[in-house]
Image 1 (cartoon, protein in one colour):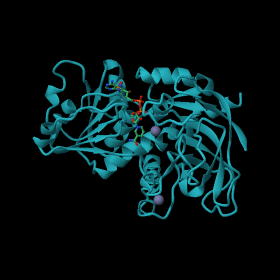
Image 2 (cartoon, protein in one colour; image 1 turned 30 degrees about the vertical axis):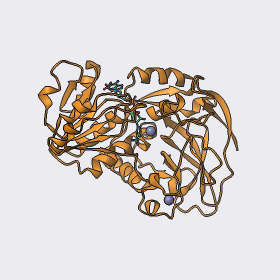
Image 3 (cartoon, protein in one colour; image 1 turned 90 degrees about the vertical axis):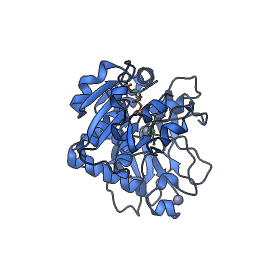
Image 4 (cartoon, protein in one colour; image 1 turned 180 degrees about the vertical axis):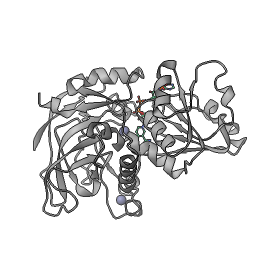
Length: 348
Ligand code: NAP
Ligand code: ZN
Ligand code: ZN
């Protein structure tokens, strides 16, 4: 299948129309017409080659919601017309211990991500969700709970699982003091999720502009990190801190806000490293951890949790033709709180 998409040809080129080839459906594949695709800051990092590993041309997009239009002969879990999601993971070896444990992102043979990644043949590059359709093995396809708005559910496929997984793995519970650093796509879902788990949530942000929104999303406190003395008042407060910041920033100051034995979890992936002072961790047995999206079973668990609690993203819907402008706005922290592309505009 030859389908329309938007691709960047280099780190300095804007995203522009591009034709890609999707494979013919294999017996285990579903063919999905893409309805909506969220814009994650990882798309921006990849297109700008911030991490130095982008293979061009790149078709980004890994927060995908669509409808099944056809399926291979062995597909048993989905039918034509089903509303489905695809996130960051589209294939893996399926037999290694990590795959068997549902941690496909750590597949020992190498995971296949939904874009800018090699298929399991280790030759063919993947193209993501800024496109009309997608062909994926049903093992990697998620069910979108009925009752969730499909466009607002799309960001759950990356931003949702990336924030749900660490909150869940690190045992977020009622009356925990949780800090969310950075109120963007990931951050705003972290606030909704942590507050739905009963935590007292504080947002640490770079400006006052998002204060009212933070309260509406469920935060109890909003602190502007750049204001002199603001962080000193929070020293030793948090059990858990979830850092979703996309740019390089000082972690040592953040660590002072942890209570003893508290954990700072990094999910934001800035392009350059930041120095870490051993003593900021040693005094108070503080911990620093990372968290990489989440596996397929946990992603379905997160979607079902969001279905039960009515959690979706706050989105700004855009046409695909406005994607470059959206990237510029994301670099200015100017999105409330996730851009989602209406993929019908690709046909326009
Ligand atoms: P986003 O919507 O652009 O939000 C990032 C937020 O970080 C901004 O809204 C801003 O919040 C804050 N920020 C930006 N520059 C800052 C600076 N210089 N200092 C302090 N704060 C700053 O991005 P996103 O889509 O949520 O993604 C966030 C990061 O997570 C990206 O690096 C992305 O690649 C990464 N990510 C990681 C995973 C994973 O598996 N670990 C998965 C998805 C994404 P305020 O306006 O509130 O200050
Ligand atoms: Zn993402
Ligand atoms: Zn594997």
